Image (cartoon, rainbow, N blue to C red):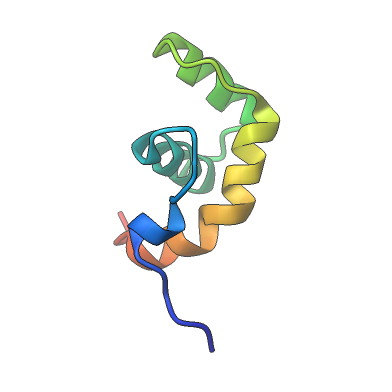
Length: 72
């Protein structure tokens, strides 16, 4: 079984702010939003993202977000 990584290790080398990544991944997992809905929501907050970027974040960070964030 692999050791859990800290948030700093998990997000090392990322160009985007980790709060934005966590927000997108949590919203995608919690509220059945499409990737394009999230792109539009982030655009309203003046952040330009591609839906494929959010998809890569979900694939990479969803297991870590599920384990480290308490359920709502």
